[in-house]
Image 1 (cartoon, rainbow, N blue to C red):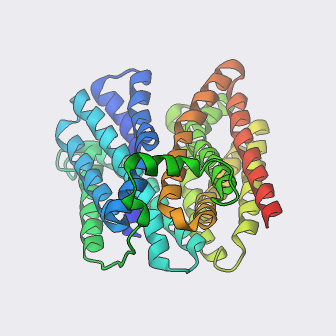
Image 2 (image 1 turned 45 degrees about the vertical axis):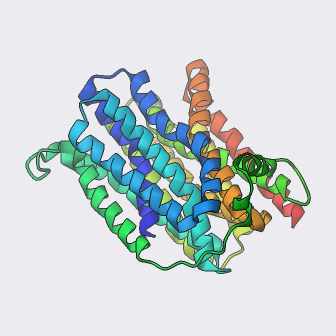
Length: 386
């Protein structure tokens, strides 16, 4: 669970990019490019990480991801006014997180050994959400408390998370986890890579249809997640005429209710079938989208944002567990493919930006609604398989 907290370091990218923009006097496009670097590396490293797990094991891969993440935490402490070093920071944060998200979930599956995987992964997402919720608060506190922050201003966030990351690394290093050797590791890298991509091709023997549906569901889930964080403040500014500082609380509200949703989901999934709970979560998101589309009052918009956070706190774990079960002999490769789906964090905001430029923020909501419709279709397809 401490590793899941460390996984949440990636969500500091939003607050960090805003402060780096101010420190270096960057344009909006350059600041957004820094943030997009994080998600870019998920596309590049997800499948290679699954192959690496076959060779060195899941635990060692997670440890490697932790080390890369720790190195990234050091850079902003000393080189925050150096643009090339900031590029390295965002890149290492993305690379470390790509490795961690690909390897940590299969490691949990190994540790559980047939336990309630959906519930456990959901609790892990709750721990990750706590980290995400804390990052903006710590950075904001540090920005106004120079003396207690030892001169680091908003960057006090990094030494705090660095210490937590070191603690998680040492504990995992000292934990004995028995792993069975992976026969795929005996194949050539090219063959392993093609075998992993083949899982996305519908095939009754490999469960490719199920894996492909899960992959696209992850793309939509992450796209909605990142899209809500970006769009919610803009909707408040457009509909209510508030300032950016006032509207910024919308993102914190989203993370708060996503944390609550993940926490409650870990208990609900221990008592309710995950497929039924997935439907409830998707319906919550659908109702939220309606509220964001038509809402004109602060109470209604805040309620819609909170409902989106609560509903989007659980689909990732449920989808991930289903995908691992669809191809149990290739869990490492499936994990790599699904984490590659985090590229939705780049794709959705891009189209949401085009739509909002054309018809306002309702256009962005419509793009998110398409993702919600796919998740509903994913649930219906799974229901037919059952």
